[in-house]
Length: 159
Image (cartoon, rainbow, N blue to C red; front, side):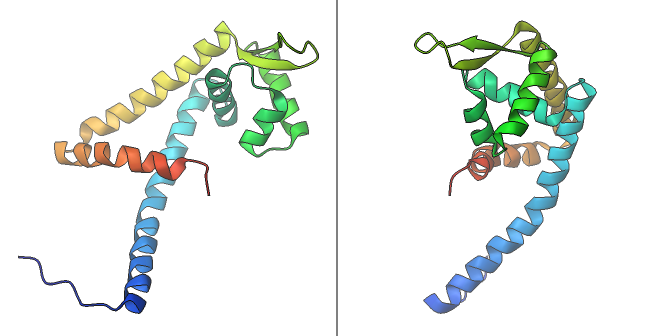
């Protein structure tokens, strides 16, 4: 039987809740960082930098996105993004396409070679993650499955 919850006033409950949130953040942060680093390494093993993998994914999900919009979305300077896009274009992973309504504006599209690189990254990352998930007890895998949606909400870029 669970012990009864302490009877906290509203003034006491807010700091207690904040402390619980800070403890949860402190517990999750290292695990998320380590998993993120490992997944970035898998992209590098596929011959693509983590940033390039991220940019390829954004272009795939947003065909026709412009360099300025991509820079804004990734919170980078437009000059820096222009250099990254130039490198991706030279690698044959993305191509510039002129818009139908405004020939002066060019958008970005993933090429077949870029899609192949992105698929290789996803395959490597999924294989890495699946191998580790397979080592966990079924209850731990179920807990992670339940946490997937809330973790996605944490990752959303909104205030």
